[in-house]
Image (tube, rainbow, N blue to C red):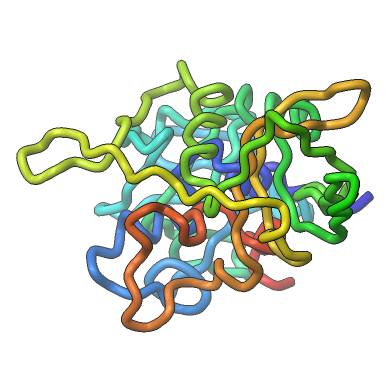
Length: 276
Protein backbone atom coordinates (compact mmCIF):
# COMPACT_ATOMS: atom_id res chain seq x y z
CA UNK A 1 0.00 0.00 0.00
CA UNK A 2 1.23 3.47 -0.74
CA UNK A 3 2.30 5.76 2.07
CA UNK A 4 -0.62 7.72 3.46
CA UNK A 5 -0.55 11.38 4.42
CA UNK A 6 -2.81 11.17 7.47
CA UNK A 7 -3.02 14.95 7.67
CA UNK A 8 -4.82 14.76 4.33
CA UNK A 9 -7.07 11.99 5.58
CA UNK A 10 -8.06 14.02 8.63
CA UNK A 11 -8.74 17.07 6.51
CA UNK A 12 -10.59 15.14 3.86
CA UNK A 13 -12.81 13.62 6.49
CA UNK A 14 -13.65 17.09 7.71
CA UNK A 15 -12.44 16.40 11.23
CA UNK A 16 -11.08 19.91 11.32
CA UNK A 17 -12.65 22.71 9.31
CA UNK A 18 -9.29 24.37 9.13
CA UNK A 19 -6.71 22.96 6.80
CA UNK A 20 -5.15 23.57 3.44
CA UNK A 21 -8.24 25.05 1.79
CA UNK A 22 -9.85 26.37 4.93
CA UNK A 23 -6.70 28.26 5.81
CA UNK A 24 -6.81 29.95 2.44
CA UNK A 25 -10.49 30.73 2.95
CA UNK A 26 -9.87 32.25 6.36
CA UNK A 27 -6.80 34.22 5.39
CA UNK A 28 -7.88 35.73 2.09
CA UNK A 29 -10.62 38.23 2.71
CA UNK A 30 -12.21 38.57 -0.68
CA UNK A 31 -9.14 37.40 -2.58
CA UNK A 32 -9.02 34.44 -4.94
CA UNK A 33 -6.86 31.45 -4.26
CA UNK A 34 -3.99 31.19 -6.67
CA UNK A 35 -2.55 28.03 -8.12
CA UNK A 36 0.05 26.45 -5.91
CA UNK A 37 -1.61 27.28 -2.60
CA UNK A 38 -2.41 30.16 -0.36
CA UNK A 39 -1.62 33.55 -1.89
CA UNK A 40 0.79 31.95 -4.35
CA UNK A 41 2.52 29.98 -1.59
CA UNK A 42 2.84 26.22 -1.35
CA UNK A 43 1.46 23.81 1.23
CA UNK A 44 3.71 21.29 2.94
CA UNK A 45 2.37 18.74 5.43
CA UNK A 46 4.05 16.29 7.73
CA UNK A 47 4.52 14.96 11.23
CA UNK A 48 6.31 17.16 13.75
CA UNK A 49 9.61 15.60 14.82
CA UNK A 50 10.96 18.56 16.80
CA UNK A 51 9.45 21.79 18.10
CA UNK A 52 10.62 25.00 19.70
CA UNK A 53 9.03 28.35 20.44
CA UNK A 54 10.16 29.69 17.06
CA UNK A 55 10.04 26.77 14.64
CA UNK A 56 9.01 23.18 14.07
CA UNK A 57 10.63 20.40 12.09
CA UNK A 58 8.29 18.19 10.09
CA UNK A 59 8.83 14.99 8.16
CA UNK A 60 6.62 14.34 5.15
CA UNK A 61 5.43 10.89 4.14
CA UNK A 62 7.90 11.11 1.27
CA UNK A 63 10.67 11.28 3.89
CA UNK A 64 11.62 14.91 3.34
CA UNK A 65 12.41 16.98 6.42
CA UNK A 66 11.43 20.67 6.47
CA UNK A 67 12.04 23.39 9.01
CA UNK A 68 8.97 25.57 9.37
CA UNK A 69 9.13 29.12 10.70
CA UNK A 70 6.32 31.63 10.89
CA UNK A 71 6.22 35.14 9.49
CA UNK A 72 5.49 38.00 11.89
CA UNK A 73 1.87 38.07 10.73
CA UNK A 74 1.37 34.31 10.42
CA UNK A 75 -1.76 32.65 11.73
CA UNK A 76 -1.19 29.42 13.63
CA UNK A 77 -4.42 27.51 14.17
CA UNK A 78 -5.68 24.45 16.00
CA UNK A 79 -9.40 23.60 15.79
CA UNK A 80 -9.88 27.03 14.20
CA UNK A 81 -8.47 28.68 17.31
CA UNK A 82 -5.22 30.67 17.33
CA UNK A 83 -2.30 29.10 19.14
CA UNK A 84 1.40 29.85 19.48
CA UNK A 85 4.22 28.00 17.77
CA UNK A 86 5.25 26.75 21.20
CA UNK A 87 1.87 24.98 21.49
CA UNK A 88 2.74 22.65 18.60
CA UNK A 89 4.11 19.36 19.91
CA UNK A 90 6.17 16.50 18.45
CA UNK A 91 3.83 13.90 17.00
CA UNK A 92 1.32 16.50 15.82
CA UNK A 93 0.54 16.81 12.12
CA UNK A 94 1.11 20.21 10.59
CA UNK A 95 0.14 21.79 7.29
CA UNK A 96 2.21 24.91 6.59
CA UNK A 97 1.44 27.27 3.74
CA UNK A 98 3.88 29.87 2.55
CA UNK A 99 7.23 30.24 0.82
CA UNK A 100 8.93 26.90 0.29
CA UNK A 101 12.65 26.56 -0.42
CA UNK A 102 12.85 23.00 -1.75
CA UNK A 103 16.63 23.04 -1.86
CA UNK A 104 17.11 24.23 1.71
CA UNK A 105 14.02 22.34 2.91
CA UNK A 106 12.53 25.35 4.66
CA UNK A 107 9.05 26.84 4.81
CA UNK A 108 8.40 30.45 5.79
CA UNK A 109 4.76 30.04 6.65
CA UNK A 110 1.94 32.55 6.48
CA UNK A 111 -0.57 30.01 7.76
CA UNK A 112 -0.03 26.91 9.89
CA UNK A 113 -2.67 24.36 10.84
CA UNK A 114 -1.94 21.94 13.67
CA UNK A 115 -3.68 18.61 14.29
CA UNK A 116 -2.78 16.87 17.53
CA UNK A 117 -1.38 13.35 17.46
CA UNK A 118 -4.38 11.85 19.26
CA UNK A 119 -6.77 13.10 16.59
CA UNK A 120 -4.59 11.73 13.80
CA UNK A 121 -4.31 8.35 15.51
CA UNK A 122 -8.07 8.20 16.03
CA UNK A 123 -8.57 9.00 12.34
CA UNK A 124 -6.31 6.10 11.43
CA UNK A 125 -8.06 3.69 13.77
CA UNK A 126 -11.63 4.67 12.86
CA UNK A 127 -11.39 5.01 9.07
CA UNK A 128 -13.72 2.45 7.54
CA UNK A 129 -15.24 1.66 10.93
CA UNK A 130 -17.01 4.77 12.22
CA UNK A 131 -16.49 7.03 9.20
CA UNK A 132 -15.35 6.82 5.61
CA UNK A 133 -14.14 9.35 3.10
CA UNK A 134 -13.08 8.87 -0.49
CA UNK A 135 -14.12 8.58 -4.11
CA UNK A 136 -16.97 6.41 -5.39
CA UNK A 137 -15.75 3.82 -7.91
CA UNK A 138 -18.87 1.62 -8.22
CA UNK A 139 -22.59 1.80 -7.43
CA UNK A 140 -25.00 -1.13 -7.11
CA UNK A 141 -28.46 0.44 -6.97
CA UNK A 142 -30.30 -2.90 -6.73
CA UNK A 143 -28.46 -3.86 -3.54
CA UNK A 144 -27.82 -0.34 -2.22
CA UNK A 145 -24.07 -0.88 -2.24
CA UNK A 146 -21.31 1.61 -3.00
CA UNK A 147 -17.61 0.94 -3.47
CA UNK A 148 -15.36 3.69 -2.17
CA UNK A 149 -11.68 4.25 -2.86
CA UNK A 150 -10.79 5.58 0.56
CA UNK A 151 -8.41 8.42 1.26
CA UNK A 152 -5.77 5.90 2.35
CA UNK A 153 -5.92 4.05 -0.98
CA UNK A 154 -8.00 1.09 0.28
CA UNK A 155 -11.13 0.08 -1.66
CA UNK A 156 -14.10 -0.64 0.62
CA UNK A 157 -17.67 -1.68 -0.13
CA UNK A 158 -20.37 -0.07 2.01
CA UNK A 159 -24.08 -0.83 2.25
CA UNK A 160 -26.88 1.68 2.73
CA UNK A 161 -30.02 0.74 4.64
CA UNK A 162 -33.33 2.35 5.59
CA UNK A 163 -31.57 4.36 8.30
CA UNK A 164 -29.11 6.02 5.91
CA UNK A 165 -29.67 9.66 5.02
CA UNK A 166 -27.87 11.14 2.02
CA UNK A 167 -27.26 14.85 1.56
CA UNK A 168 -25.65 17.14 -0.96
CA UNK A 169 -22.43 18.48 0.52
CA UNK A 170 -20.76 17.33 3.71
CA UNK A 171 -20.73 20.33 6.01
CA UNK A 172 -22.89 19.01 8.83
CA UNK A 173 -21.22 15.61 8.75
CA UNK A 174 -17.82 17.28 8.96
CA UNK A 175 -18.84 19.13 12.09
CA UNK A 176 -20.13 15.93 13.67
CA UNK A 177 -16.90 14.08 12.95
CA UNK A 178 -14.88 17.00 14.23
CA UNK A 179 -16.83 16.94 17.46
CA UNK A 180 -16.32 13.19 17.88
CA UNK A 181 -12.63 13.09 17.03
CA UNK A 182 -11.32 16.59 17.59
CA UNK A 183 -13.52 17.70 20.46
CA UNK A 184 -11.86 18.39 23.76
CA UNK A 185 -8.56 19.31 22.15
CA UNK A 186 -6.71 22.58 22.35
CA UNK A 187 -9.54 24.91 21.54
CA UNK A 188 -12.93 24.42 19.92
CA UNK A 189 -15.15 26.08 17.42
CA UNK A 190 -18.49 27.75 17.33
CA UNK A 191 -21.71 26.26 16.15
CA UNK A 192 -22.38 28.64 13.28
CA UNK A 193 -21.28 31.72 11.39
CA UNK A 194 -21.45 35.04 13.25
CA UNK A 195 -24.37 37.23 12.32
CA UNK A 196 -24.47 40.98 12.08
CA UNK A 197 -25.01 41.37 15.83
CA UNK A 198 -22.31 38.84 16.68
CA UNK A 199 -24.77 36.00 17.35
CA UNK A 200 -24.16 32.64 15.70
CA UNK A 201 -26.26 31.98 12.60
CA UNK A 202 -27.08 28.33 12.02
CA UNK A 203 -26.46 27.16 8.42
CA UNK A 204 -29.40 26.14 6.28
CA UNK A 205 -30.39 22.49 6.27
CA UNK A 206 -28.58 20.47 3.59
CA UNK A 207 -30.45 19.24 0.52
CA UNK A 208 -31.53 15.60 0.79
CA UNK A 209 -30.81 13.34 -2.19
CA UNK A 210 -31.16 9.62 -2.98
CA UNK A 211 -28.67 6.98 -4.06
CA UNK A 212 -29.97 7.40 -7.61
CA UNK A 213 -28.58 10.95 -7.56
CA UNK A 214 -25.08 9.74 -6.67
CA UNK A 215 -22.62 9.16 -9.51
CA UNK A 216 -19.35 7.34 -9.93
CA UNK A 217 -16.50 9.77 -9.39
CA UNK A 218 -18.38 11.66 -6.69
CA UNK A 219 -16.73 11.88 -3.28
CA UNK A 220 -18.30 11.12 0.06
CA UNK A 221 -17.84 11.81 3.73
CA UNK A 222 -19.97 9.49 5.84
CA UNK A 223 -20.41 8.60 9.49
CA UNK A 224 -21.78 5.24 10.55
CA UNK A 225 -20.81 1.88 12.01
CA UNK A 226 -19.91 -1.68 11.11
CA UNK A 227 -22.81 -4.13 10.92
CA UNK A 228 -21.83 -7.72 10.33
CA UNK A 229 -18.42 -6.53 9.22
CA UNK A 230 -19.85 -4.13 6.62
CA UNK A 231 -19.78 -0.36 7.03
CA UNK A 232 -23.31 1.09 7.02
CA UNK A 233 -23.49 4.89 6.87
CA UNK A 234 -25.99 6.78 8.99
CA UNK A 235 -25.26 10.11 7.35
CA UNK A 236 -23.56 10.40 3.98
CA UNK A 237 -22.55 13.67 2.35
CA UNK A 238 -21.85 13.68 -1.38
CA UNK A 239 -19.67 16.11 -3.31
CA UNK A 240 -20.02 16.02 -7.07
CA UNK A 241 -16.98 15.08 -9.12
CA UNK A 242 -15.06 18.16 -10.18
CA UNK A 243 -16.78 20.37 -7.64
CA UNK A 244 -13.72 20.80 -5.43
CA UNK A 245 -11.44 22.66 -7.78
CA UNK A 246 -12.41 25.99 -6.31
CA UNK A 247 -15.33 28.29 -6.95
CA UNK A 248 -16.30 29.15 -10.44
CA UNK A 249 -15.40 32.69 -11.31
CA UNK A 250 -18.00 35.05 -9.99
CA UNK A 251 -19.87 32.30 -8.15
CA UNK A 252 -20.57 32.37 -4.44
CA UNK A 253 -20.87 29.28 -2.26
CA UNK A 254 -24.37 27.90 -1.88
CA UNK A 255 -26.19 29.16 1.19
CA UNK A 256 -27.18 25.61 2.15
CA UNK A 257 -23.59 24.40 2.17
CA UNK A 258 -24.20 22.10 -0.81
CA UNK A 259 -21.01 23.22 -2.49
CA UNK A 260 -17.73 21.41 -1.94
CA UNK A 261 -16.60 21.37 1.67
CA UNK A 262 -13.50 23.47 2.23
CA UNK A 263 -11.53 20.54 3.50
CA UNK A 264 -12.86 17.59 1.51
CA UNK A 265 -11.21 17.34 -1.87
CA UNK A 266 -13.36 15.33 -4.28
CA UNK A 267 -10.74 12.95 -5.62
CA UNK A 268 -9.00 11.96 -2.42
CA UNK A 269 -6.28 13.78 -0.51
CA UNK A 270 -4.47 16.63 -2.27
CA UNK A 271 -0.71 16.51 -2.83
CA UNK A 272 0.43 18.50 0.17
CA UNK A 273 4.16 18.20 -0.37
CA UNK A 274 5.79 20.12 -3.22
CA UNK A 275 6.77 18.07 -6.29
CA UNK A 276 10.05 16.26 -5.84
